[in-house]
Amino acid sequence: MTPSGFNLRNVVVVALLVALVLLPIYVALSGERFVLTLFTRIIILALAATSLNLIIGSGGMMSFGHAAYLGIGGYAVGILAYEGIFSGFVQWSVALGASALFALIIGALSLRTRGVHFIMITLAFAQMAYYVIAGIARYGGDDGLTIYRQSQFVAPLDLSNKAQFYYICLALLYASIYLIWRLVNSRFGMVINGARSNDLRMRAIGFPTYRYKLVCFVIAGTLCGLAGALLANYTAFVSPSIMYWTRSGDLIIMVVFGGMGSVVGPLLGAVALLVLEQALSGITEYWQIILGPLLLLVVLFARGGIDGLLVQWSAQVRS
Amino acid sequence: MSEPLLQVTDLAKHFQSVVATDDLSLSVADGDLHAVIGPNGAGKTTLIAQLSGQLMPDRGGIRFAGHDITRLPMYRRSRLGLARSFQITSLCLDLSVLDNVALAVQAHAGHSFHFWRDARREPKLRKPAQAALERVGLGERAEWPTLVLSHGEHRLIELAMALASRPRMLLLDEPMAGLGPDESARMVELLRVLKREFTILLVEHDMEAVFALADRITVLFCGRVIASGPPADIRADAAVRHAYLGEDAEGAGCG
Image (cartoon, rainbow over all chains, first blue to last red; front, side, top):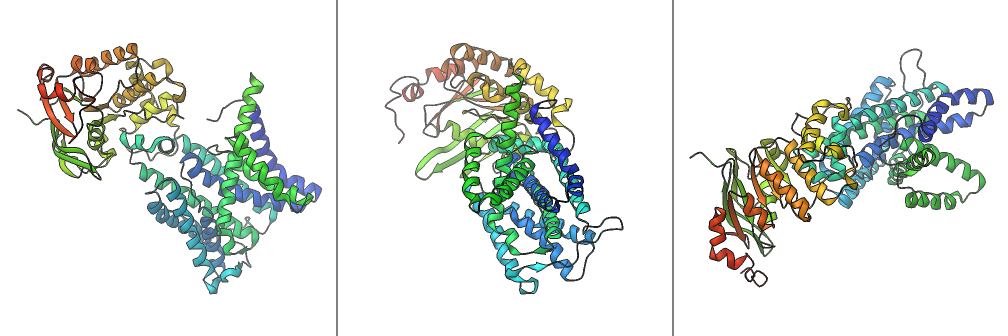
């Protein structure tokens, strides 16, 4: 449960949300353009992690193939641009539609299994998609595909403007977080919560849980497809590596680090992880030796991740 | 006479070489409290699991309220008005008590593809749930996390959930398992009230409770019905005494 009202945790969260809105102003004043680039990437991956959290955090469905949707969304943009279709409306619709369809098929098959089987099946399907994409020579195969023009929208919108693109990503992230917050507290969300907690019981009281979980799976996949479309525009390049299984692992780490099941957890996790990665890699090239144990500590001692720690501290401050 | 509410015909289920249900037939009349008793391993929970749809039988048929439900999935049976409580407490422990019961209300209030409104603020779900909790005496625990309540209270939440789904029939799997004497007495009183409103199939070890509550009793032994009738007849039945009621119960094996 997320506590409401004025407390340490909410102050931190709101401060972060506001700071991200003000970030381009800081960049304009300081001239540190790489900060904007770094945070655009963080925002996009936070969106992907947020979508993943809907299934692993709220739904208890441990998908290990979530990066597949990053790839599908990214390649929808890349392939259409390669074929001369630059309209963002078309590209993004295809990105969302293809991700939704992929999620529907994968979900329909994998949700019949549980536990380790579920993890392995989602992983297997994602790897299959990876090899299929890597095998298409026309679109660059292993080497990937350069995107020469960003998705084109109507007049004032211009994705090649770095600040504007940042704000588009941020707006989409905030909208998604709000949407998911509504969703997890709705009737639908209650069923998903219940199914995570006790699927058998939910079926016994009359819920066809499979259907609800499938819809949840499709929503999460679609949202991650959107992140993929953004990522392709960000790097102006797509390669199969964006859907490799280690990328799915990265997303899981962000969710766990930030706080599974908390709507802002994945954002906290993405910011903390990627900023740490950036800072540590500036200090030593063996930065993973520091980051690894840190992650371990969070997993061992803070079951709710960063957000869980913040909630605990808020409670201590109050009492 | 009209058709019984629940009719089980020649039901059979085995797990590898173990016969759990052996050509079992049983009928429960509308309005009755029908108890199923039998020693450990007699197949009582397996029977409940098949009635509720958790397990599919190998053979035989189950009719409920005029429908053939033998192959229906769990949620469809629940929709027809067959509510089940679990022997081992089976709740959503990380949700609040009221959330658990409200979910039981929600399950019978149309589909749940509503993505926007806050379900915890819907009086249509919360009020009946609160009412069901009051009936079992847990009204004041509504907002508590389910995890921190006692075992006895969990049993009562199970019952509140069954009530909140407004069933035609309750399948109660050992509602008194693990309860202390006071809690048991309270549960018996509660069941005495509930049997006036619902048809109940009660699986229970507590003989005192069974003989106090039941209109009919069926005795299972090794997956078979060895006796069925009013409590007085069962008490007098020699086969039952031999198989179950204290006499040589420890030494009795299937075969």
